[in-house]
Image (cartoon, rainbow, N blue to C red; front, side):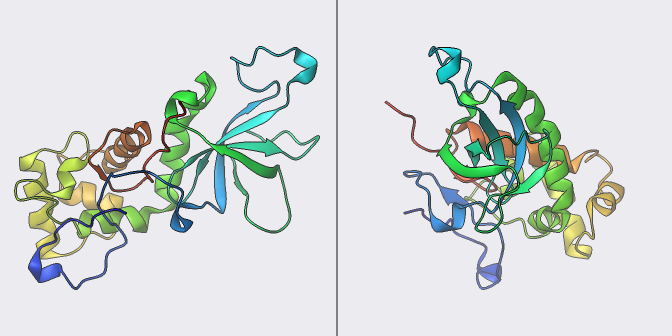
Amino acid sequence: MTDELPRDRKNASSASSFEHKKHVRPKQESGEREEWVWILDYLPYGKEDDLRPVYQKKPLIQSLGDNKFVLLELIPVEGKVPPVHIKTHIGPGEKEYVDRVKARIMYDELSRGAKLELPLVLADAVKAQEARFIKFYNDAQPVSMRQNSLELLPGIGKKLMLDILAETKKKPFDNFEDLKKRVPPLRDPEKHIIDRIIEEMKGGQKYYVFAAPPKMKRE
């Protein structure tokens, strides 16, 4: 079970779409299941470290979940080759490119191509869910006595954090452009989100803000 962090008493009753969770033991909870994924790489002969003869190898898809940013390995529909960087449905119903989910994987298990594609896909995913991430900036709360959730974002220190909080007190940000206009030192708010998501995918974090904690490493 994850422990919810203490919030500012004034905001204790306010609902937030972000739950800052301490990492105890990652598991696939119902809220972490993905209905949609972004294709990161198509591997016609499976993983590079698969030493079986070519005729025994099966194609694989490596993908990024659109909700909790879970990394998944998928079995493609026979005869279908999904384009990289598209978003496709993997939930119940008609199968477009994905036959089934094979396994949840770790960041280190991504192919070289998938790792290169990941920041580009995340840029589109974050932009598509702009309201979700603007809410994070608007609703930022302390995660400890000395740290605000904004400081979990790579590149955001105390001064920038205080500038953002000062502006939210005046009026919530409407979108990324509004945020950049009102806090000029924050030149690329999307990138701070993307960098944090990738950090969380790699594991070893005390708090998981956007991504589900990675699965336990196989022995």
